[in-house]
Image 1: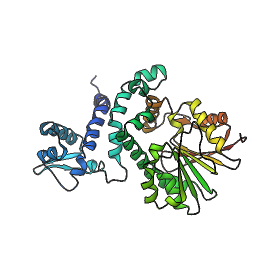
Image 2 (image 1 turned 180 degrees about the vertical axis):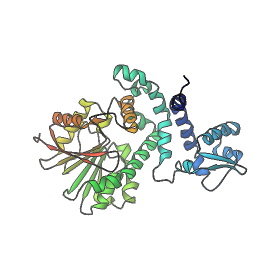
Image 3 (image 1 turned 120 degrees about the vertical axis):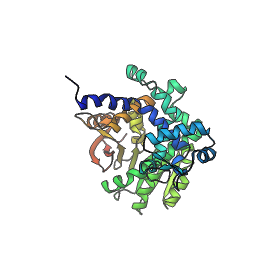
Image 4 (image 1 turned 135 degrees about the vertical axis):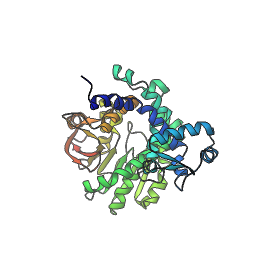
Length: 343
């Protein structure tokens, strides 16, 4: 009996998946060299691109051939031209997939993911073993990569804020403290939407150095205070809403509880905890993006994405009661909580 067409296609599909890491590197290098931006005004020859990017022309030609095979560029008489798919990698697109490609293809991600088997066997993160330091220490000591990471986090906030803001009413608060809020894109968008609200942006000092432009660009710098520090030591008092976006998933349960307990010591009995994270389904597998991100948390930090039940357990251990989970029109939810007993 001859195999069916679908049976014959399975090896091709699987081969494409196996090549995924190498394909990601092709796209990452194209983004790093700014190839899509250099083609946005029209076709350019390989020699022109090599001169503009300072690369070896024959090797760049081989990269461009791979991009053509991926349908990111076409080859024309006038040179290489962007396809609609390739245009999505331009740096002037709101999705900023160029930052995503560069982040995924960066040495720190690439080498860490090469040790996934070790992580699965031991439950330990790979990043500290590979680089001899934690991921946030690496970003501080490698400012170019730190800037790339912060820009990607800001772009993520821009992408999701239009889903987060309509989903939750912040008008009952007077001050929102954004814990480890990066450059303040989400906090700034909240303040922009609620003119009576004030904000406190809390993060490591070297991260906050890039926040002024974001807050000024949103026109909220006069209503937002920036304070540097570590959320393992203390967080600012004075808020009645404490926001943690994509923070807890970086950590296993014990350190995540410690972070929440630090936050609880700054809160008053009428304060509200707002954790913005993915919530994995209780039954059945998550979508591919969430499943891969869950593994990335393991590889980088020994962290994890969580189900609703796991968030309930985390809140209970830290002295909070999970009051509700508000879904948004994006991949994240708002996990609301209140103090059970003020410490």
